[in-house]
View 1 (spheres, rainbow, N blue to C red):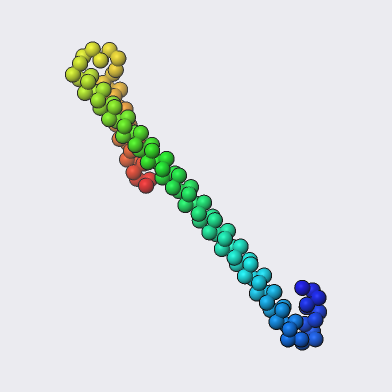
View 2 (view 1 turned 45 degrees about the horizontal axis):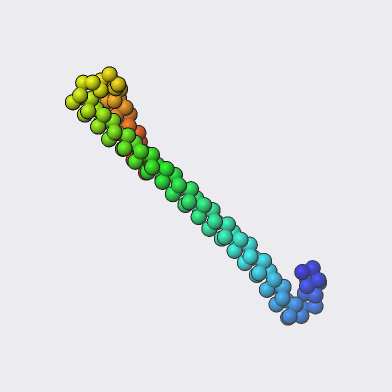
Amino acid sequence: MLRLEQLKDYQSTDCVNIIKTVQKLSLTSSINRNVRSLTSNVHLNTIQLLQVKQKQTETKNELIEAREKLKNVSYMDNSNELLQIFTNVTDISMQLALIDVEIKLLESMC
């Protein structure tokens, strides 16, 4: 490139054209690098976002399943007094309330 710059002083059109082409290529390659970098960052951010959403969905589904199980235990508890030995109805009610709050928080984040 330095040699081409020196030849440029002679005003040879070939040299001038070569220099312009090289300068355009260097500009284009940096733009291409920036675009590729930006594209890969956007792709990574999208993947990370999808992973977070997937975890939130899995957590929400687990909470819903836990709530259903607790409700079933609560119904069984109400129908069968022997289960009161093993479970505490107020604990189940509190757990259900906490699960509902967590589900609402997850929904508000989505």
